[in-house]
Image (cartoon, rainbow, N blue to C red; front, side, top):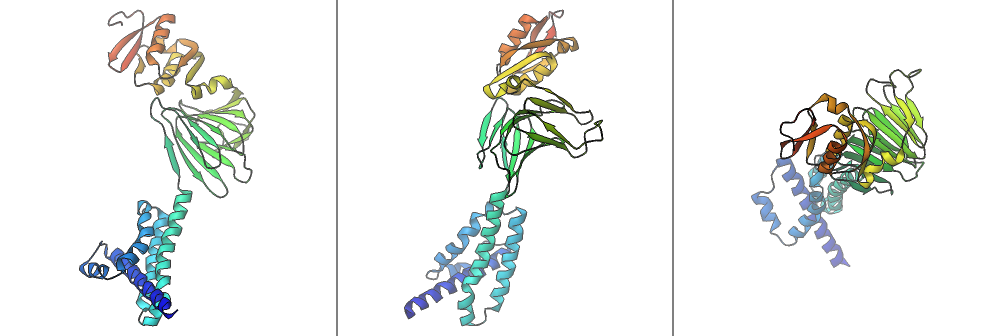
Length: 342
């Protein structure tokens, strides 16, 4: 029994010394010193150092997170205070474990907090689509050239659509509202499905099913009594710009969500806005060389990413011709211009 206690005291002493070295080297901004290397060569000291340094080094990847910095500073300060008081062998033995605990628990607590609450960022490149399943079972379908950040907390589920388009299928949880910020709009739901499109000059919020409330922190311009929230019913679409009065209209859900199946559906839309969407899915970019061409209207179903197929159909049905500007650029011109036609 005494041997066990003596062995435990020796382990605690080595752990305390390892903690003291961690404090000293961190404060000095050095990774080692001749004295530290000599201490490390003594029997069992390497094991104590590894035991202490493992958790600490594990969270070095998030060392610059504010919570991490604060916890490490506090842990070092407390450990240094305890180290300065270790003037008697008995006190050394009793507080050895506490020194290491202050360091390790401080690091683990901050690292664990950062890891649990850190915003996760998801993005796609041109022509790519992906579906992300979140920790609560909610799904985010991310369109091409889009980006969303996700931060889940104990009482809320907060997302931010930074660009592009996404469909959100929300797992029901009344205790944690699900919100998505897109531009000046904030969509709040608990269990529903909706689509947000930021591809054009306006933010389009389309409710597929369920119920959502859309907020605008500055109030909707021109709206009666300047309301800050609008409720949507299934099948409705909110169109909101930075300076225009918001509009609510019935939406064609099949058309709005066709992109999730790799299709683009247009119904009597100007060619300039159609091309803007087509260009999001292909490395071959289409440009309009004549304003008259951009004003022409078109309807149809097209495969996302098939820019050449789109050009072939457009030039067949509309009075325009395609001109190769470069290896990855095609210009649409009026048929009146014949030079350089493909």
